[in-house]
Image (cartoon, rainbow, N blue to C red; front, side, top):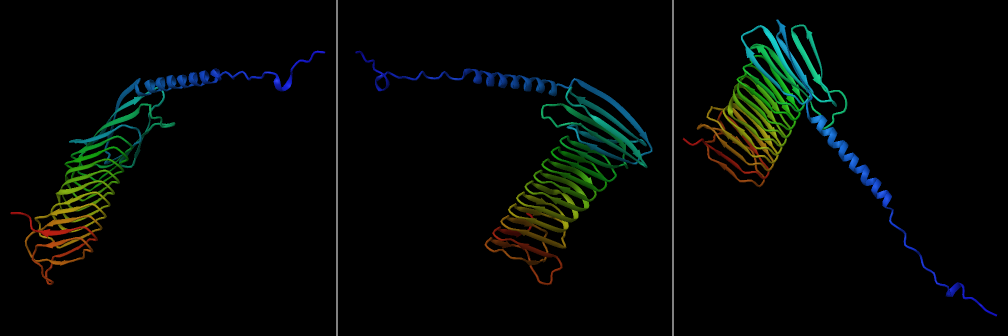
Length: 326
């Protein structure tokens, strides 16, 4: 009788599974197709296949309002005319186009431009404007990322942007300028000014009754502006102030530098850890204020009966109050 071995003594082995190459090949192919599609969209979007230039003229209008929500810029100049002349360049791609509306309401021209649809980063959509106005025109301009340039206006100016820079020069009249993260450069302004940014710098020259400047982390330079009243507020940005009659400046950690050759009536400064360096004309001052741990150097003549009053408070910032060098 013959027995055959089975069970425990029978040889057993497992054949290793082959890697799933098909799945990886499919994923690789899909990734390659996605890269190709993104490249094609980027090329189509960034090449402006349409570039259109047109112009319009409006009679007997005293005000222009521009809301440019494309990536384009706005440039405004003046001329000896009673007309508002608008030249535009529209740059578009197959994936994005500019929609523009223009209305005349009363004595004003209202212009709005935007790019409908999703704001795709790889597309071209811009409306660039060159506008000529009578000198006395009032102006209101807003852009998203485009720059704003004005020169020689004499009316009221309101300019705002998100990331585009604002450059206003040789302006006579009130100015309001606002930006989120871009530079505000206001040069040779004759009139009151209000300027505000979050992280953009503020540069101002000229003269006027009042200068107000506010920023979170941007630098504020008013050293070239002469004003009766100055107000500045910053968190961490440095502040420079020039000639004034009355001034108020506050900061958390940004330093404040003052150099005024004009007789002053009052100066109020408040900081947490920012240093204060003020150079003021030679006369008697009523000086007050406290510093918790910062050094204080008061090198001016003081008198409780003085008409000019100075108050400087800091926590840990140092204080230096002197006269400008001769």
